[in-house]
Image (tube, rainbow, N blue to C red):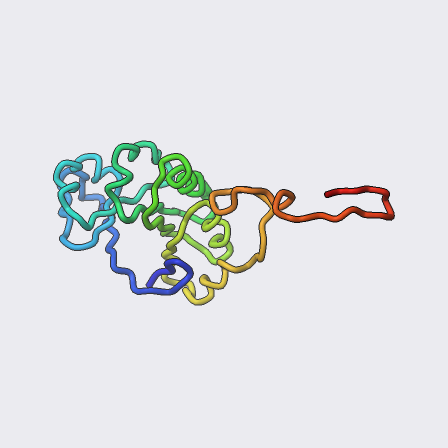
Length: 177
């Protein structure tokens, strides 16, 4: 199960992870909806781009710009969070959405915790695969922890002070319109 568009749904995709014995150029990529590591995509691009149901996932030390020419080929791109304290995936997501124009499913996977989901959706994630040892129902609640935001991001282009109509404070003699 994953959270997608603020709903708990069955996960139709399988994530391919390489074992110590696997290499990107020789690993077997099963049929069906598969999300492959970036290195597998880069090594076997010509073969894999023929498949209609292929996604790619990036580690937090990989650059989303590597997919600049291919971003439109994927219906899903995932970012793996190896531990909750590694925030580089937020930048990857923002760059995929804002700079590279990715419009498909952007999934956060790995050490994804409830406390982070609200902030992850702000940078463009719309699907979340929380850790299996955590309650997915509880994680879902994290998407609505706050009713409004101050800062701009992918999901809100204007800061709060530009969105709020203010009235003057007569006691201070100000006329803010």
